[in-house]
Each structure stands twice: as C-alpha cells, then as structure tokens.
Image (cartoon, rainbow, N blue to C red; front, side):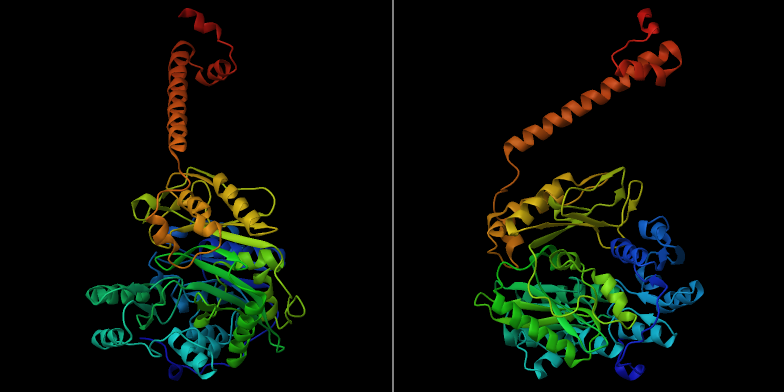
Length: 524
C-alpha cells in the first residue's frame, strides 16, 4: 500500500546531534562512497548486506557488517524494520540512505527518527511533499514555477490515463511517483504502445520503490535535462551549487553528466538556482537535494521533479566546487551550518562523469553478469573512480548493472572531455563486458563534443556510423588477440616440455623466460 501522510505523523524538522557511527542503508558504490567520508571524519560505519553481497566491497570496507536477507530488495534493502533493528543492535547514531531504495521514503525517515536515530536527509514532511513527483508538481505549481503539462495526481486506472494521454497528445511520459533514476519510466510514442508500457512501468516502480503509483506528463521534443544541486541547513541557509547537464541518457538512465552545462548562461544559472532554493525553502528542506528541470531550445525551463537525496552524479559538483557533499550532509545532520560559508559565486573548471555498466552495448545493452578476474581503474591527475567492485567479486543480475563511475576534471570543457576519454581507455575489466567503448564513442560524437546535444543524443548516435572505432582499430585488436593467443600457447608448450624432463616445472619455466635453457633441455 502506498504511504500517505495520514498513516503516520510526519515531522517538519530533522533530528540532529552527535554522530559517531553511521549505518549505510544501501550497497555497492554509494555505500563505499559514504563510508570513505565517514572514515575521514573519524566516524565508524555499519554495512548491511543481502545473500549475494556477503563478500561485496561495501561489506568489507565497513567497520562492521550485518546480514539482512535474500537478494530481493523487498526482503533486504527495502525492509525498513530490519534496517532499524540493525542500527540499534550495532549502536549506530544515524542512518544514511544513499540513493535509490529507501532514500526518498518519508515513512522510513520518520521511523528512523521515531527510533531515536538521526536520518541523514531531509525532514519526512519535505520528502512527502517533494519526493513523490506528483505532489512536488503541485507544490511548484502553487509557487508559480513553470511545470511540464501533465497530471498532478497518480493515476491508477489505465483507461483514465490513456484518455488523458490522448487529450494532451503523444508522445507522453509515464513516471514512477515514488522514485527516480529512470526506474518506472516509459516514453510512449503512440496509442498502440500504451498498454504494455503501462504494465511494465508499474511493475518496475513496484519492484524498485515498493510503490506502483505512476503519473503522466507531456514529452517535450528535444529538451535538455538540467538539474540544480541545492543544500540547506537547520540555520536557515539555502544555497545552490550550480547545475549539472544530464541529457546523455539511455532508456531515461543517465550515462554521462557534466558540470557546468554548456547550454546555461550565467544569468540563467542564477535564475534557475534561485528558483531551486525557493522550492527548498517552501517545504522547509534540510540537507542535499536536486531540482531537476527540462529546458527547451529557447532556454525556457520547466520544473520536472525534485530528488530528495544525494544524486548518483554528485561527484561532478564536488569536482567544480571542491566540497565533499557527503561530509556536508553529515555536518548538517549534526546541527552544524553549511561548511562553505556563503553562496559560492561560480564553478571552477569543468567536470564530467561516465557511468560504467556491466552490459553489452552491441547486444541492446543486455546486462552481463560474471566474476571479475582482473580490474584496473584509471589514474593520473584530476581523475576519480567510485566503485564497489574488486578482482574476485561476482556481478549478478539482482541489482542495477552500474559498477563504477569515472570522473574527470579539466580547466575547460574540452580538457575534461579528453581526460575522461583517456581515463576510460585505462579502465580494464576481465570476466564480463562493460560499456566503456560505447561511452568513449559518445564522448567523441560531434554532437556531444560541440556541446549542442539534447536528450535524444543516444538515439541519433545509434543511427550514425561509429565515429570512434575504425577499420584500423579492428585490425589492431585482431592482431593483438592473435599475438596474445600465440604467447599463451607457447607458454603452455614450454611448461609441458620442461616439466616432462625435470619434475620442477616452475624453476625451469622461469629459466626459459629469462632466455636460459635448463640443463635437462639438452636431452632433446
């Protein structure tokens, strides 16, 4: 059953206080990310894990870890009572929800506070208003913020939804009311596709957020997806930390993000930032949040939704501000003011983030599970990799296929783009397939390189010949594979021949590799 304000009294304020131990109610990359900041701040961390995450990196990285159930999220990472019980058992002071799962669930935030714990996030009341996309649209509409035409309430009847879609005209978007991240979202171009999209959107929303409520809005043609990072404390300070361009999307899942946006002017940045801050003030917001907007070709912007949590793409904002947003979340939860003082004036340089996924881009991006035999993450100046995997870890299909984020900073946009491309070329993983080659092709696609792109860039790229992989690349790859195979066969042959004569294969193979044939080799 969907949560409503009448089932539980919602607090309009957050509980603050000392924090010495944090339970991270999440998994994988974001759990490790939060734990790293906790370690730097001298705070102990508590991990929770499902059956398949017993040996996950976040389980190993934490100060202590607790098993919470089988892989299905509803039985583990979405089980509120289990998470609160572990927090109490471990002696945690606070719970950080990460992103996804229960991060935008007002009932969970309230239960955490009722249990005497600190929820590192906004007040439950603010989440109830701004977390569900439909109520957020209502709040913004009343505040005079332009919104995309669409329903302001979730719709449960398929016939009613279809009738409204016909009224505003196709294409339309179905969206999960209880969460984001591209889950429970479907673009529908024609009436014939409505029924199947309706069923799949509701099913995915239920599985991802425990709520199958969806709403409908008009799809804008060739929009840009631009979001504003906002931050508020309990002392009345509300700041915006500039914008992020998130228009490179596949199936409404962001793939490459950058800050700042190549489309936003300084005047537009200030206007969007002030609107986002006013939205946060309107609901008594506290902590990190993101106001997402669709922007048309004439730079008119429309409120789309507010994510009442930390975003996946928060590292690009950290790169252009120099601020640790997780640290700021924890300090605000302690009752401290925003750590950077006044409103920052402008972003420093440029940053880009690419989401590395265990999927095959040549086979319609099908997830590719497998055991990681080798992993090398990129290095060098101004490059960062956030991940929750390691050599020996097994990637399953139980959760999102994103396995890492590679972030690069540069003095300007082209420097950041070229550095990210170089970093992705160094990302090496054996045991499964990743989308790194596809990401590099997008970075070199003229439309992206020039900065003149919109949310349809992936579809247009797929209709064009590859701009990155040439016949020369293919020949070099085949030659490299042939040489590698030849060396493997030679090494295997050497082991057999030398081992047959001495019984001390290891010693003599090392001799052969140094170019010194062992004495026993004279027998042949």
